[in-house]
Length: 297
Image (cartoon, rainbow, N blue to C red; front, side, top):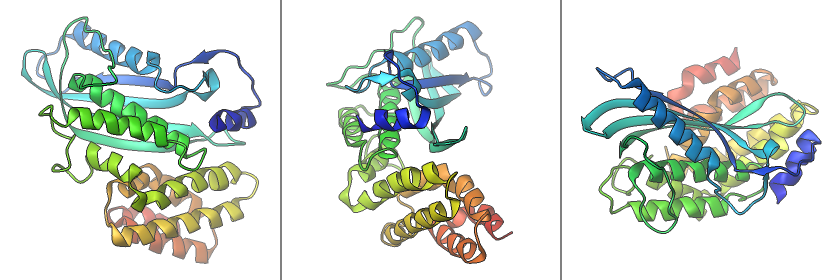
């Protein structure tokens, strides 16, 4: 597929060894629990990591160099009943940039609405047609989200199949009684994130994700001036969408991943670029204005 071709260009490496899509690292943090069973949570951490890395999520042949680097930081904050856990999870994924050792963040999202059950030696197994347990469903949902955004960064709307798979998980989970799966919760929950990626109204956001990475970041080393122009055009498009859909889930997701990077990119620009970038970004995300002020320094 297109992504594989790009990776051959990025690395000039050919491989016949195929593996799963994710290179996930998992941390299960139990600092907020009064007492913990270390071996039990170590097993949970290991099993989650193995599930994410061993599951075949797409029909694509994925070479080892193509695996998507991602981190799942699971913070256990309460144990309401035996083997039931209330948790938050921070998910971060990245992809390499051409001609550099730099990896750009694609997703940096915290999910605060997660209750799941886990039992000793539990087998985590994804079932495509039907509701899994809330542990498996959330992990599978975000796996497809990670893949979808990654594919979008290499090809226009390249992640469509993955977002549709995430949507199927969401639909199968809506009657489960767990929070985060329906449209009546937070406007930035799993439902609205997935809905935005598949909603034609936000198509320009996905186009911007592609142009930002392939025409902007991947060419930055050779032509930073032209790359900044392409990136600012994309930010301008995002601002137009933001005026109609302020604080939408998909735009929040983009800014959460890119705010620090955008600040660094435009600190190196000329005065007009700095002012333009600052004005646009501050309008899209007023909560990050202190960070964006550094652009003008």
